[in-house]
Length: 284
Ligand SMILES: Cc1ncc(COP(=O)(O)O)c(CN[C@@H]2CONC2=O)c1O
Image (tube, rainbow, N blue to C red; front, side):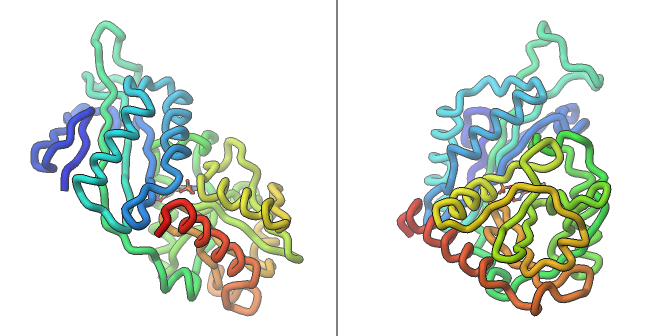
């Protein structure tokens, strides 16, 4: 399949990334992952909007318009014929002689936009059966609201989960549960959904935002409030959300069953509401 580099669709073998690209050397860039269902992009505008928000927060001028990126991604999707999959996109501050400070304006260093597609089936069996997670210290910086390429702490947490045969690591900072290494995290207690407020300590996930609306529209209490690891371990239900995981039940935490060890009622309700939303948006 083709790849986007800048405003061109190229063969992967023709895509060259400079040795001194700041995304490669400093993680100096931002990214998005967008889901494709039945050939249609899901919540694309929200993702592209967040890409620009993240870029602004690191003073990175993408030097392309959201419409330009949208058109490029649409043509990439058509070209590659993705049915159920994802689009990965990122923007870095470009290539310049290695120096922590930004390249000088006079150097005319351009941001580097790349995007590519994957054919990724929906995680049906995990959505049905639920997954296992560990809890781990949130050792990240204090700007987790920026979807940046600085993912080393996320990578290490995800690997710690994988080393325990688990799907995700649910992170906590000073005893307060923040989010997963690549997902948002929720508990259900007495039929209330609770999740960390969308501040600088978590990424305000697009799936999280869709879920908040679904809860409100269906009179399911959606409480954005800090809760502790103790509340997580003693919740009636636990689930995580992300673009690629959708609404994913967590049935075991640190080796111990959550609730009665099977996906909970509210989680199931939210899964079906989310499914209906997908079908409505992409007429699958
Ligand atoms: C740290 C973190 N929190 C929350 C989320 C959930 O956000 P969305 O609902 O907008 O996806 C992600 C998504 N991470 C992307 C999504 O899939 N793979 C990733 O790396 C994430 O990396």
